Image (cartoon, rainbow, N blue to C red; front, side):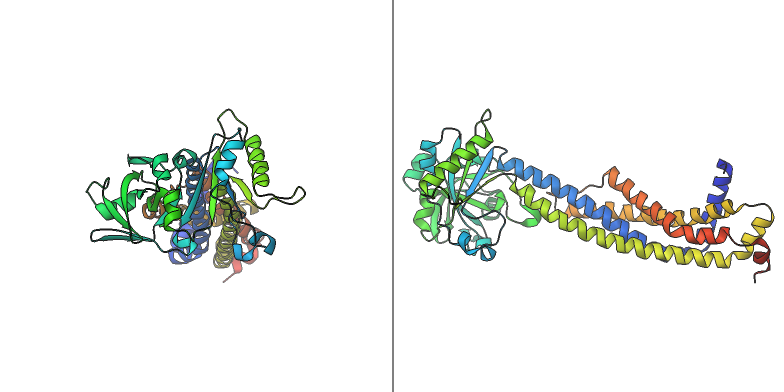
Length: 418
C-alpha cells in the first residue's frame, strides 16, 4: 500500500467516525477508563517512589535501627516466641557505645503517638494542638536521623539530659498552630499537662497525605521522657557507621554486642531485629506490587470492555456499509485495502480513547500534586507512550475480525445487499 492509499484510507476512517459521534463516543469509554487508570496510577506510584526515596535519604543512608520486633508487622499476628521478647533497655546504647568500635554514633529513642494508642496534646495560652508525636531521645538524635533538622533555636545538650530538663523541640506545623507569627523560642507550652520550654523548632517536613511527619513531632531529652512517662517500655535504638566504614561489620558487631548484653544463648536466634533505613522502600515495594496487580486488573477490564465495544461497533459498521464495500471492490479495491480501512477505523477509535485517557491521567496527577504537594506525581513519556501503545494494540486486536470479515465479502453479494 502506498502512502497516498494509506492516507486516503485514514481519511475515510476518520470521516466514518465523525459521522457517528455518539456511537463512537460511547465506544471510547472503556478505553478511556483503562488508559486513565494505568496512567494515573503509574504517575502516583512514580511520585510516591520519589517521596519514599527522599524519606529514606532523610533517615540516613548509613543508619540502622534496632527493635525487638520485625519492622512493618502487627504484634498481634506474630508467633508467641516473638511477642514475648524482652524489651530493649535504656542502658543498651551506652553499653554498645563502649564495646563496639565500628559504629560512629548510637542513640536511644522512645515514642508516644496516636498510632500507638497514646493521646498527646500541647497548649499555649488559648491554642491547642492534638495528636502530636512525643519522642524522647538523646543529643545525637539529629545526627543519626538527618531528617530532623533544626531550623530555629537548638537541640538539647547532654547537660539537659543529665538534669532531665523540661525542654522540647517542636515541629514546624506545631509551632505555627500554637504561636502563629510570634517567636516560639523561650516560650513555655503545656504538654500533656506539664510545662516545657520550647528551645528549638524543626525544619518543615510534612508526612505523606497528612500522616505523621517531622512537622507533628515533639522531641525531649530521653531522661525527661522517662520521668514523665515511666509506663513507656517500648524503645528503639539507631546507629550509624563511618563513611569509610563497613555496614556489614557495624551490623555484625552490634548484633554480637546485643546478644551478649541480652544473654542470648549461643545456638538461639536473636531476640531483636536490626534493619537498615531502606526498610521503607522494602515495605513500599511490597505494597506497590499489590497496587500494580489491582491496577492491571482494572485497566485490563476497561480495555477488554472497550475492545469488545470496538469489535461490536465495527461489526455493525461492516453490516451497514456492505453495499459500499461491494462498490469499492467493484471499482478495483483489493481485499487488503478494505481490511486496512476498517483496521484504521478501529485503531483511530481506540487511539482517540487512549489520548483522552492520557489527558485524564495527566489531570489526575495534577490533582494529586495539588492536594498533596509532597507527592510529585508526574506522567512520564514512557507511560504516555505505553497508554498510546495499549490503545493501538487494542484497536488492532479487536478490530481485526470485523476488518477481515469486511475484506472477505463477495462484491456481487454485497452489491445486492439491501
